[in-house]
Length: 168
Image 1 (spheres, rainbow, N blue to C red):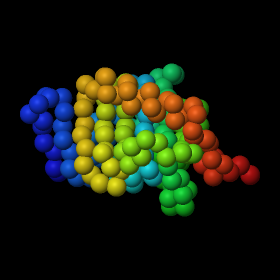
Image 2: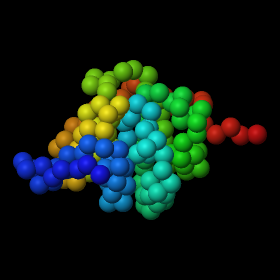
Image 3: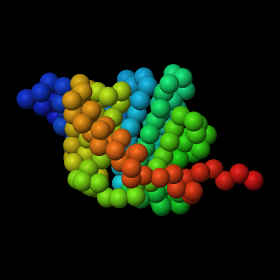
């Protein structure tokens, strides 16, 4: 696993492989209590489509009556075609876990991030590469990204019909 403690900021951990990103994604969800926001191109299966990760997200969502998990994805096709644990979870816990499709390409459209409780941050500079960082005390950075996330959520995303449960 490739992770390096930053010499500049003791809260910053530089990450350079998928296993490090998966580990810190789990830790952020474990430490979170109420709010989780994910922006990703297609919810990287190596990080997000893991049983242990989905179980942690499920526990967070069910752990507090005000808990909310919001996920925005640029390309939902892989989730729907291959299936994805978070999509199954969103269908089961539809009042707590929400997945939306982005309708526009946001600024810095290659980045991806996971924000927990407005201060826990996992950030990929480019969603196609495992290069970025984890910061467990990233209040200002996380809030700035959450502002962008909220704007996209409110103005430029939708619940695609293919993300819903088919009821017979």
